[in-house]
Amino acid sequence: MAADIELTPTSYIEHHLTHLTTQVGGLEGSFWTLHVDTLVTSIILGVIGLGFMWLMVRKATPGVPSKRQAFVELTVEFIDDQVKNSFHGDRHAFIAPTALAIFIWVLLMNTMDILPIDIMAWIYENVFGLHNWRTVPTTDVNTTFALALSVWFMVIYFNLKVKGVRGWTFELFCTPFGKNPLLWPLNLLFNFVEYVSKPLSHSLRLFGNIYAGEIIFLLLGMWAATGIAGTFFGALLGAGWAIFHILIVTLQAFIFMMLTVVYISMAHESH
Image (cartoon, rainbow, N blue to C red; front, side):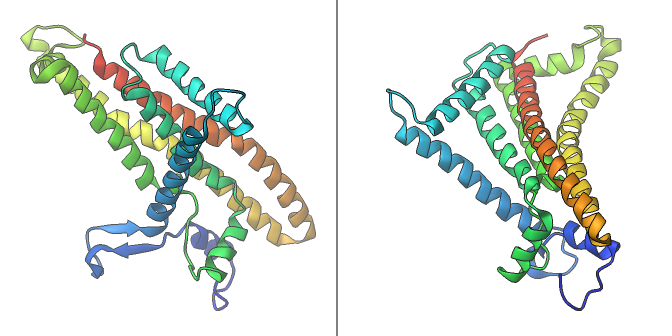
């Protein structure tokens, strides 16, 4: 942190939870504020994930696979099996590749939470000259909402593609309580709540779990500043939490991917 800023628990947390932002158009108070750290980190991780998969496909051999190829094949087969259990159409045309891309991208973004937060802050400030730079894109609710809304728009698209405007409108007004015209408002209200709640729950589940993990790392970091005992136990518990957090970041990426598959599968079903 900057030398002229007194290090207190409040300033410590504010420093690590403040985004590097820019106003669109360069005007203070503009409607659009971009979180530069979130955007840049997300793009870099997306390129790394897709680039790694592309490289493995290019180097794939029909004989005995290398360890990296075997790992990729196991991952692809695992995702494909999960999609097959939830989606009963031509999953290889779009759904399975999309699920794989989502899982890898979200997993990479979540995994950034494992990096030592104070060491990364020191690198950003002293190597790159960036005072505020948040490492984990999925601790930014804008990221998780953008991902969830992208899935939501895909759900709308497949509803229209599979059922047509007339079929989807019929479903909105006539399910789940029946075709009686008196029940149309109730059906529409029920479906409206369902469609609104999907992106909310989809995004906030991922954001809440990863953000909570980051807060715990910050609290352990503050404990390390209380003395020798705090440093020892803070480092010990931090290492233990990091190991446990590996399970959390993987599980949350899997859950986000599976909900995407389930939502798109529901869009292909007629009631």
